[in-house]
Length: 80
Image (cartoon, helix red, strand yellow):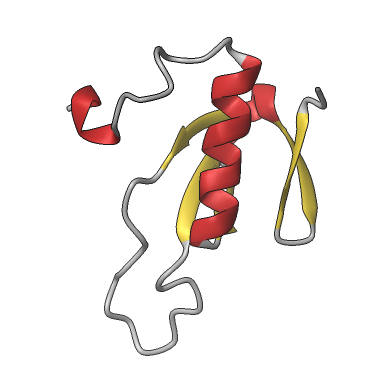
């Protein structure tokens, strides 16, 4: 398994990911170009912006890299 995940046009090392947003960005600013994208926060205050599909792929790769979070039939609601 690769420790890299493609987000937009970048290959992001999984070990740099601090958190992944659960909801898309919305700030209401007229000139915002990131609305509807999910923020993936990296170490050192950096971020990359992902589509919903890229976010899901990142979460899947992080879970595989860390050995999984539990049975495959558990739902996301179980975590809350």
